[in-house]
Image (cartoon, rainbow, N blue to C red; front, side, top):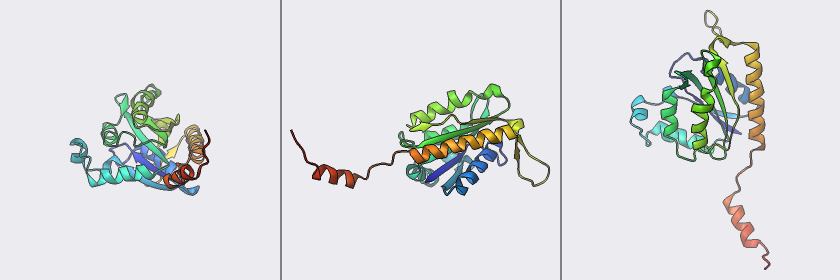
Amino acid sequence: MYVVTLAGSPSQRSRSAVLLDIARHWLHERGTEVRSYAVRDFPAEDLLHARFDSPRVVELIEQVSRADGLVIATPVYKASIAGALKVLLDLLPERALAHKVVLPLATGGSTAHMLAVDYALKPVLAALKAQETLYGVFAEDNQVQYPDGSAPARLAPALLHRLLDSLEQFHGALARRPKPIDPNLLNERLINARWSI
């Protein structure tokens, strides 16, 4: 299995990226190949000027096209997903997520922002023809704690439980995802089929 992760926060230190790091590590431990991107990886002028031919954008499109699934994380600002993330998603082809399973992750100041995933992110994923978009995880900012010093961030136990449960569902959805039929095999079956009228 091959998964692309996409961090939507423009900040270097991001709670939504913490969720994504845990997801990436969890998937890697289960033998899933993971390729990671963040909106910070893309030149701002390429995003602002909608440069579909930007080398980084072209690379992302190629990696998404060969992926089985996508884990996408965003902070919620002003009751919506990160603007830079929306701009990047706008550069993907119309059917970029066809045959893909998507797990959305989001963080925000309070549960009042929880529905932003449903009304701001999921419609974009549907427009990109995601095969299956899972319910996902919303975390309040206070559930992701940064200790003093260089220690890694800690998740509240209830949040960690929900994240791991969602990852199990995501992994299961990837495993049951129908595999595309090889066009050569399909052609051979049609040629060698016995037709009756």
